Amino acid sequence: MFTGLIREIASVKSFVGSTLTIKANLKANLGDSIAINGACLTVIKVLPDGFSVELSPESQKHLAIENYKNQVHIEPAMMMGDRFEGHVVQGHIDAIGTVEAIKNLGNSYDVFIKVDSKHIPFIVPKGSITIDGVSLTVNDVSSDSFRLTIIPHTMKETLFKNYKKGSKVNIETDMFARYVSHILMHQKKSSSLSWDTVDAMNASF
Image (cartoon, rainbow, N blue to C red):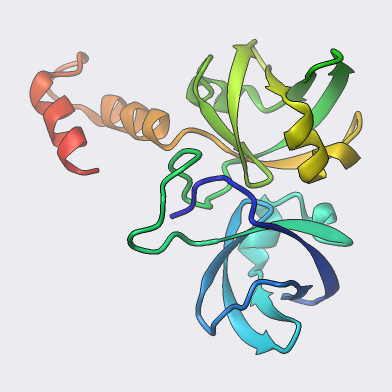
């Protein structure tokens, strides 16, 4: 599990076949789970100045793979006792979005991202979303896009500063929205959500 708070912007040393090699200050261990641009990947090799992870063909198919070059966001998985910030992030990418526009408002930036309309039910106004591993709050949602407002600090300290119209990004929608939708879809006895179901959902977290 992750929080969506970027711990480091690391450099890509190479990406050959299924092996992505990262130069980073983070001291990884073999088998560690590390979110790279929001995707949870496993360390398969530890190097003096970084580490390597493996991206299966399935992973490469569902990621904005063109962003796995130059620089990437990294966040190690949470450890027991870590301070919880951001929101609950699994590192499971749901969709690839496209930046439609970035508007400089002076003291903030509005970022508009287009996504396949089938993902819109899981993107909730004032809810949480993860973009390339960054935990953010959704402001507005339309039929096939949504708007984020980003403060100057986030713009400066993340790769958002490099994004432009047409940039592809990894998206992880809100986990709880996905779970509720799945439960409702597969309820057999009733089309309404019962309190017993709600209690069961709460008990699972």
